[in-house]
Length: 391
Ligand SMILES: *Cc1c(COP(=O)(O)O)cnc(C)c1O
Image (tube, rainbow, N blue to C red; front, side):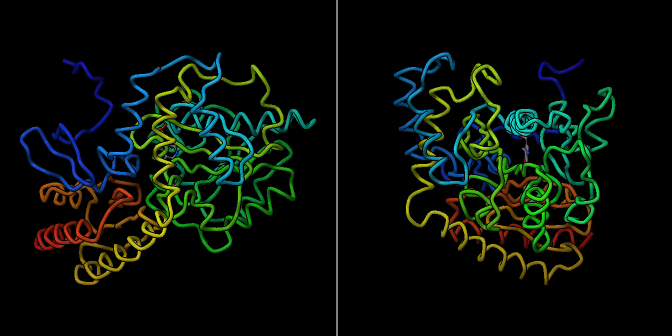
């Protein structure tokens, strides 16, 4: 008999009752070190006092009014995102896929509003993940995600990851934009080759295309800056963010320049829930913490420490770990054996991680992680590697 919850996930048989900081606590009282962070979502850990306070205060005022009315927290959040980035304007939605859908719509509308309605195609890269709606599936073009769901949404072309020359070749008279993750997350933590993003920026500028960044996973401090593009020093025209934005409360956003958003006038796009008072209260509270002096420097310091310690383990267990790579606290361990075996061995040692493509186990600690947490994760990893090295 089909379970009441539609069985679309391969879930671990674990259920958590509460959390605090970098830890989740199971119903039986056992504590787990959370280096999964709800797949790069709970960047400030669990039950962060400032987030709890901000959301509690909003819960007692008003939850939802719709976008038929002004929303104070939304205006404030948009202004803060604009002040902190390349963007001039922000659309709010509820998830990563919706933020990407908005980015694609902005790009198509930009071209049509600029007198080039024939330009609607979006160029993407192999190994990409942009979400599970029909259009974002077409953008990611992963066979395993598309199979059985009928005709693939038209208007997406794909070339090899990191290959700017192939991107140049693939640009045609109907191309509207290039869509890229600055660091591929789900695909297996792939960092862009040198100058890749800069070359895409040049290609976009030379051909009248928009450059769209999918920072759903890399954004909100995950890569050591508010957004990963700030590390690479190459700004987009449009940027999608979600996962970490609400610290665990569902909210997404699409940031754009004034030029890119030229066609996004009243009635052109919408969302019932997008940016509702509860969601923006959560996101504003996340920004309060992240924009405080020294927050991103801490993420970068923890990156240096984590990569150093992981590198030491990898050198000792070359039969288990093939490679360690990452930016900020988006870190991938490429396995020699099945990645699921390493993740299982870590979970038995009460450390939670997330799998990714290319046989990778992702370490996605909360950004508030401390050296003591890293010590604990490394001890568990050593135990897991010793176990796997034997079999
Ligand atoms: C998770 C993710 C998405 C999809 O986000 P949802 O909130 O699951 O719709 C899109 N792009 C990237 C890079 C992601 O990591």
